[in-house]
Length: 238
Image (cartoon, rainbow, N blue to C red; front, top):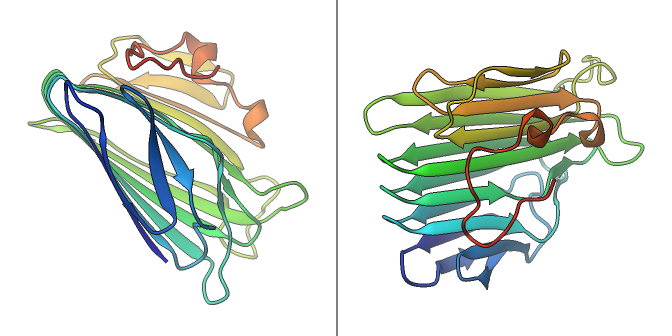
């Protein structure tokens, strides 16, 4: 199944939503939109294309009502989600959806592209867990690409879980909590050996924590919270 979702936020009016396939969205506040699953997706072979555009001076908080569960299909275990975020000058975007859970045998791949204009503000949090209770195998790969008007901000790839039957599924990281914040001028912060917030050369920061399960990973708030105020009327969960 192919799913397409487009949300456009414009200053002074409600966000505009266009959706088809297994994902819909609902306005839950003047500047808040929640994603809603309308079918079992992503299933192996599914493709999701999600585009979020925040216009000049507009604000948007993007949330979801439930976790996303990726499951293998009959013909292939691979599913793909492509996220594209465009934030115009003076725009503000705060993204914190519920975790993505990769079921046993599934291989989910996410590609996130961010385009930031001058004066744009962003907080983008992503959480992933490999396997449900009792499941040991599954794989996730995430690419995060962020650009400013005149130069790249970030190129980042991370893989979780076992990608082949011979991989050590027990020792491989199985959970991720990450957060991209722009702008942000905080210095390096670390939490043990598996979590850190690192400043980016062009401004902003990237927090990354990995572990066996989400409840065991450090959260961005453990390292001092977020530099982006949530002005869209929703406070992110702790």
